Amino acid sequence: MKMPSPFGKNNNNVSSNYKMRKGLWSPEEDEKLVKYMAMSSGQGQCWSEVARNAGLQRGGKSCRLRWINYLRPDLKRGAFSSQEKEVILHLHSLLGNRWSQIAAHLPGRTDNEIKNFWNSMTKKRLRNCSSSLTSPNASNLSLEPRDVMQGIMPMREPNMIAMFMDSTPSASSTVAQSLPLNRSFDPPVLSASGYVNMPKFMPQVGMDGDGFYGNCHGIFEENRDLFIPTLESISIEEDNNIKVESMEGFETCWQEGDDLKVEEWDLEELKCKLGFLSPLLSPLEGC
DNA sequence: AAAGGTTGCAACCGCATCAGG
DNA sequence: ACCTGATGCGGTTGCAACCTT
Image 1: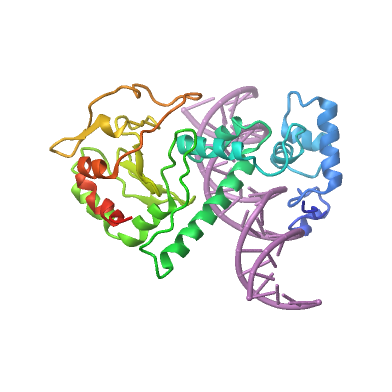
Image 2: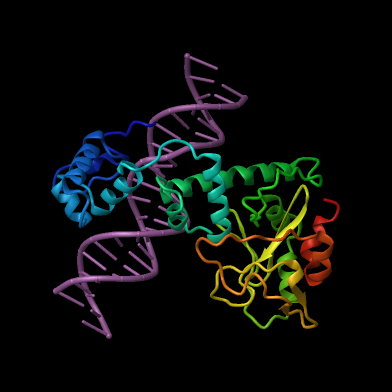
């Protein structure tokens, strides 16, 4: 555990004139805040008042953050357990970067903590991926064990991302041209978190050592976050519109607490059904 | 042992939303 | 309806500890 510097990053703000302090919290400040929170039972908080009444030269926002992320008595400490990691992966595959919602499912953990965990994990995996691609055996992709968490397949296998971004530079435009879908179209982009955001209503696909997997996000209604039809339940019509054969299992959008399952998609069948995506899928040949 | 690079994480920033005046 | 302050959230930054060379 790092010891906080008593003067934070910018120690010029320690000066008088009631300038708000910034930077790391000192043990004394922590003590003041903890004492005040204990005294006031944490009820009816107005954080700017907390800051004032506790005698802290901090903004309410800073106090709130410090309390929530560090001083709260019910916080867990230490590394995430493997169970917690599974929950994070599972929920992230469903919710995306909604850290506070994910944190709500992990008692004692903060959104900040989860976000940091996720970002460092993503960085690691991207690094691994790029090193495997730049190696002489780049075509022989070294795939990590599949991340199957409680039946949900994370869609953004870094190797897949790399293939989209590096091996098939024209893939997105090719697909865009080949999709006469009567909806707006956004090309795949690499998000800040290192994930490929596939266009809405396009299948999100990934791969692992055992084959191919995927799902479809938001195929049928723009404002619903998550639909996961099985491959068997969809067909591609002549005009390349995606049609659902069977609504079984996804009449409704995902709701908190639902236990969703994604069917594993067979590569050959997927290619057959989604022939117009072949420019994207062809790099996977031989993997 | 020292220098440089990497990692983990605390904290800040900016924006969105909401409530009260 | 508009303004203002408080709050919440996600993205980003910066620093200390750790690791590698």
